[in-house]
Image 1 (tube, rainbow, N blue to C red):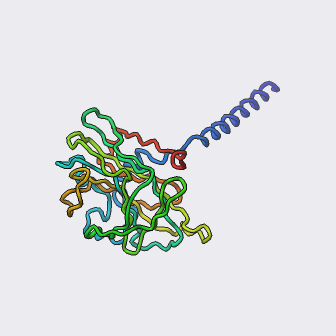
Image 2: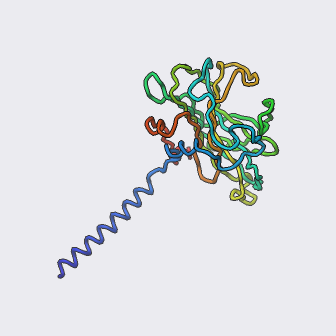
Image 3: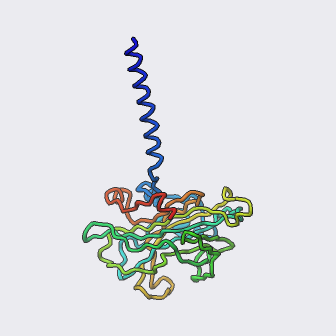
Length: 270
């Protein structure tokens, strides 16, 4: 009986120890910000909220959609972009900003069946555009440089924050595109640390997209020299880092061709 009792206690100790050790190891593993499931979710209707000032007649007002997709036609360049809006029901927060960083664009090649990184910049560039983009009207945005090399911004009063890769457009082979993925990271931060933290009241929505352009230097000409590739889901920005995506691939295609999207929490803090 004594031997059986000691054996039982040893087994019990071993189970408890292994569980505690596993928990400690798992806790140290970086948690992924982006994933295949997130990418698929970001191209599934409807939006989490309606972006303020976007006419309901726009085909992206209610949910994500593709435009040119994988067919650039005669366009020879592309650029990844995103846009930040207040919620259509309002944004009561006055002391919250949205930090944005790590914008990237990937292309799946028909030629070799591999993903290629086309664009990547920690810092984005952008401006405050009319929420309906009418006339391509814009003005300087409420931008603040952050210590990690990224930026934060506020949007509202009839204007969004339309941003893009800081490296500008990149050349593409229009006949080699089997898929496009654009992605960025964002979170809510406090505007003035001396004032009350009202991030729980913030209602900002962010969506990713991308454009094909005629070439690297073409000027905007009422959508004659550019057209969008697609527009992803508008999701609420929260206090934790999130990935926001747009892809031209279907859920089945993205599972069969997983992109190199390893973005963990250690990367989000660099």
